Amino acid sequence: MSTFKAPKGTYDLIPPDSATFLAVREAISAPLRNSGYGYIETPGFEDVALFSRGVGESTDIVSKEMYAFETKGGDKLALRPEGTASVLRAALEANLHKSGNLPVKLWYSGSYYRYERPQKGRYRHFSQVGAEAIGAEDPALDAELIILADQAYRSLGLSQFRILLNSLGDKECRPVYREALQGFLRDLDLDEDTRRRIEINPLRVLDDKRAEVQKQLVGAPMLRDYLCDACKAYHEQVRELLNAAGVAYEDDEKLVRGLDYYTRTTFEFVHDGLGSQSAVGGGGRYDGLSEMIGGPALPSVGWALGVDRTVLALEAEGVELDLPATTSVYAVPLGEEARRVLFGTVTGLRRAGIAADFAYGGKGLKGAMKNANRSGARYTIVAGERDLADGQVQLKDMETGEQVPVALDGVTAELRRRLA
Image (tube, rainbow, N blue to C red; front, top):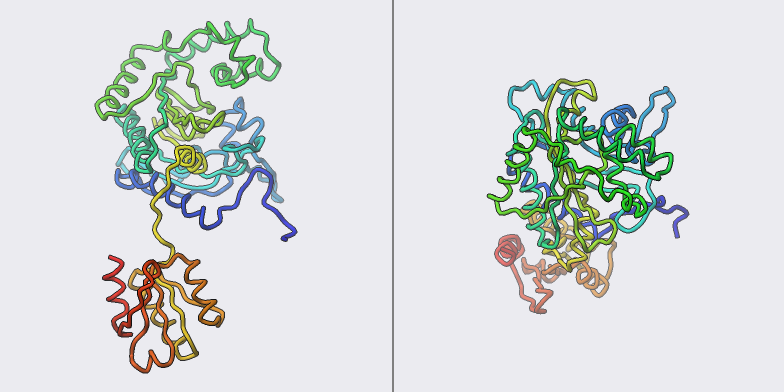
């Protein structure tokens, strides 16, 4: 046993399960890559102020969950708790918005960190794939991102997820609603932390998951009753585009999400098979975030989908992905000359795009064939001195047990034919 273990609330991705995570990342990113989104990668830590300004000091993410630390040089940094602020910071720093081609469409994948109470579906280290469309205010962009996420989930075989949709208004109409909501909340029996939140960002109180809080929120003013005509029209266009695309959604007037930067469109993907941690992803429009972190006005929209949660959703629905074999061909040499020759054959197979492995460690035939079977390879190449003298190898089909001689210089062509 090792002396060390993975830190509490984290996990290791280990074969064969890691193959499912890779397949999920690939499936989520595939529609993005086909829709003009370019890949971006940002550091795992940033200036702590980037998140306190952008995500919001009133959020649990910043006030309770963020891993913040001070370096030896005195810099105050934080492990990134989410991706949007980092991506927008990188886009601004690189002046991508000045290229003249707006929106700037970016996608990313990586690990994020929050200090939370570990439970199934909620980790302190988790993986997400995200997408951001920066620099354009267009309901078609909002709809596009929702449609692409829906497409990704359905390509994985998921069917039991729901899309929740709401509008949070903008800087014109939300202040009026904010004042009305604050007046309602101040009369409730709430703890001191929640009362402080009322003054900073009262919408976050609506997102409180505690039953004793939700019970008191019955009769709270609804944002839909305060939306300005422009926000109503914008939201209706998003809904119309989703309807036209055949993407089902549910209007959820209480949907707020846990980040301060959202405006207008906000949405969440939930899977009821995951229990209390039902959200598998979400996002929305964040038209004011660029100004919050010192940039120009750049209306933007984006989402992040949890890879961990998506894997759990697949398990909940009993969906098994059709994963490619990690090894298609396994080479078993008998003797030193065969070892040299077959190692070259394996190298050639790999260069030809065929997944191949080799019996390392000088094991005998019996042990090597056990390894071949464990590898999951469809075919095994076996060769000894007599085979090499005849210029051939023995090709064994591991499913049928059939074994035939194949010319050494024709192995790659024969395997290509059989594996096509």
